[in-house]
Length: 254
Ligand SMILES: NC(=O)c1ccc[n+]([C@@H]2O[C@H](COP(=O)([O-])OP(=O)(O)OC[C@H]3O[C@@H](n4cnc5c(N)ncnc54)[C@H](OP(=O)(O)O)[C@@H]3O)[C@@H](O)[C@H]2O)c1
Image (cartoon, rainbow, N blue to C red; front, side):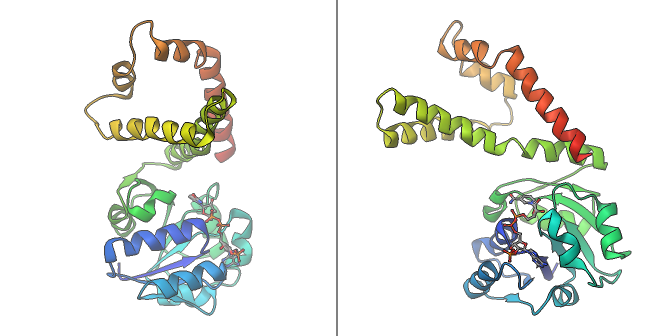
């Protein structure tokens, strides 16, 4: 794919541009919408072949594949009157906006796929879930760290719900750090130590020959400290509360 457009150049739009240019790759031209002006200007100054267009229609006209990355509530404003010919490919990354909804807004017969890019795409380090599978869309995200095409929108929504757990994980780590600080440990020492502990967890996840349960068992001594925290804190009630929260999110996404 030689010409890629992005309408909505915020956090995820920026991450996609950085991913496309990762390692000095200049194989595609990138066209950005003018809104999110500061980010768009910064990206076009930083990278060769990344240009800011006069309006959203120009982004579509110059691109073979257009990524829609505005906030859900801005989509109608951003796309009002924008014409998308059937020979374009549209990638919808807006959480909670189905392809039917976007197709109605754009009134186009162009092929359309939903995708869940994550910020780590900027370093080509995250797998992107896509539905429906489309060869050009798949190869774009393959290049950006990997692609996981799923069969239907229900499956897509399950993956989308999983991505809603990320900030809870960071907050869990922040809570551990605060707990240590409350016990007299210097905040920077607690922070450094917790980061180091969980970077180790991150590295061990790379070993795909071990299941997640096996990895947990590898780190646990019978009757030891890890088993104690797991069984006294992440007990059945806590685990069920998480499952209920995910179920409720999934209902809303569906
Ligand atoms: N952040 C993530 O990790 C992530 C991951 C996957 C999917 N998404 C989805 O991606 C979308 C954007 O999320 P984000 O976190 O990147 O939000 P964001 O940082 O707020 O970026 C949204 C961008 O859209 C721009 N915009 C608003 N109205 C526009 C218009 N009429 N025409 C063109 N651009 C317009 C905004 O410009 P102004 O700054 O000028 O308002 C802003 O730069 C959301 O639908 C979200 O669900 C986000």
